[in-house]
Length: 253
Ligand code: PGA
Image 1 (cartoon, rainbow, N blue to C red):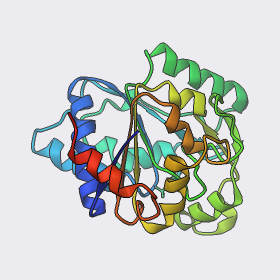
Image 2 (image 1 turned 90 degrees about the vertical axis):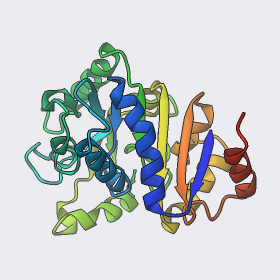
Image 3 (image 1 turned 135 degrees about the horizontal axis):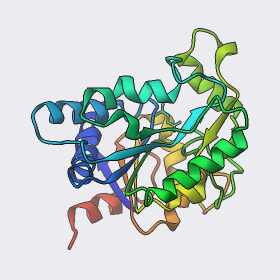
Image 4 (image 1 turned 120 degrees about the horizontal axis):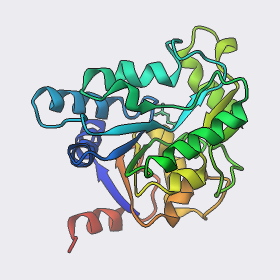
């Protein structure tokens, strides 16, 4: 795992944009994430696209997850969110931006179909990830099997609480979601996890320095041959080996 520590969220976004730009210009299959963390990255990519520096015309995308029961047209569905915050502002072909079907009559089958669609597309080249305050990636909550596939998940009460800010009332926040599993995510060839803010510091420490454990699903990155983690100082503040990570970042062969 490469741990890159930057001073500010803006520097995290710029560093991540360099990586995404490289993949997009090569026509790669991108795994996209929603949530607050990647918004600055998406804004940076939109700005670079307008300057002609990055094109998504040859890329396709798979989202990590989707709320169960929300219509795609609902403004808080991840189908809508990724279009509003990113893909509709660049040259992504809309029909190639895929997400799990949150309104499927048979969610378990929809989950398996989505997992297969990723494989059939040749897999994900670069998967963008955020991390929950409880260590989740995608919606793989603590206790998720480290080999899990795309499936229905019961959202942790903390996740429901964290996501309530996007809804008018707490009652409206979905209690279930479809999420790529940890096994599914692990098959992406490059994982790029971003974390900013002190509320992520404990989860980041557990991910990078704690045991490999279903209790911290993000710790699966420890098993991945190509994982890049970009943190701001606040998210990195509880790392015990912070000095080494800075040194290694500045001293690469
Ligand atoms: P956030 O969510 O970017 O909104 O903090 C991250 C996550 O829960 O994966």
